[in-house]
Length: 469
Image (cartoon, rainbow, N blue to C red; front, side, top):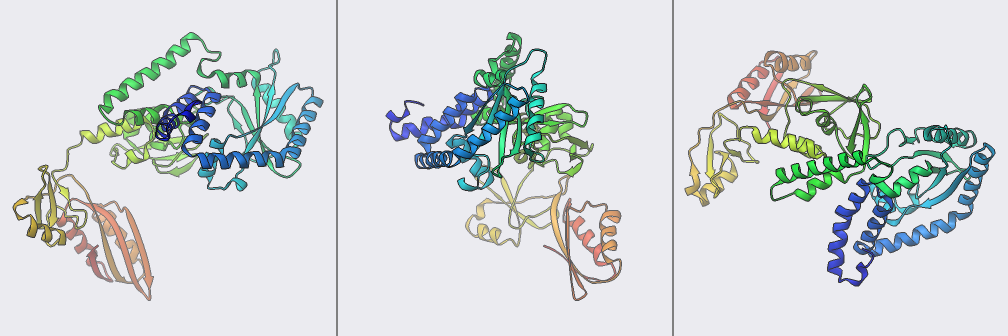
């Protein structure tokens, strides 16, 4: 990457793309922070030279503009800690162009409005008889006696290090010039380990276990992927910044950023994942597709009738969750036919089938405009179809118009839920001049069942019209 300037533009883009997509995240996963940072910025420089140069200029301009007051902030920290008996090294470190660019895109800010373009690092020596955590907390205590602390601004990576081994204690302090400053409190060992990564201060056994885990998942991915998607699945499995989440009993569950409750459930076990119905995240009721954040406490609730759905694949992030969901979906009985996405026929309706070149049959209602056009052009592909109900459920939406009265809504819900035993997926109601219009979504096995439901609703007092949308 350091010699990329001597290569043609197409080679530069190819190698820079590989580096940004694969090798820089790999270095991050191995805990090689300096290597990761240099690879990211070299890649960014050759992929987006104009943006890189602009950010380099803006960072340097900001460094000069903030120099005097940041030096004053560092002097205040040093004086405060030295008066308390601590021997520390303090310096301000500006983030590199790629890190700034990534934060700008993440938060939707321009450079001038981006928070924490730099951070202040405090490095302390390990004292005999005092743990690193105790030292960090003592420094934190002294600093927060002098500077105001931002509520919720702590990230404790000492107790819960990232999976790449990174450790530090982060806090946000209000400088005398009125801006929140990100401060990292780290021991000399922690700083050294961020350079050495996964081999820093680890036993041979722990390194072997790490490599064995890596090798096992790579082989599993290769076996599952066959000829496509291998690198994508490797990247999603290993090369993401991670978040630490917890079960209600305090068990740590490490997941990649943007992971969801589904990933959490499958990480605890496939049976739990397959039967997950909803969750409580930090005590709040949440969908199983909710995205998780660092420190979330997640409680999974199951249902024997619950099972993975196709849209779970879009919500899942981890390789394990995607693999198990995919395996379950593959085990299901394949639908006999494809349904026209426009007319959406269901069992019991008058339908017509068209056989495609691959032998698959697509069903249409007989009055579907697309079916009429296809029949005129591809009449030889028409086939006779017996579309009977089975266990498959089909989503439908009906519209109800009625004269408003006391208890009307309760009667409608009672009819659908209690008498007909249907689960309502969505309901929308609007009343204008005593005329009520409701839209209700639910699922049925076929056309005859839908007709029965609509007849029951039509019999409710005040209902004037029921129609399928």
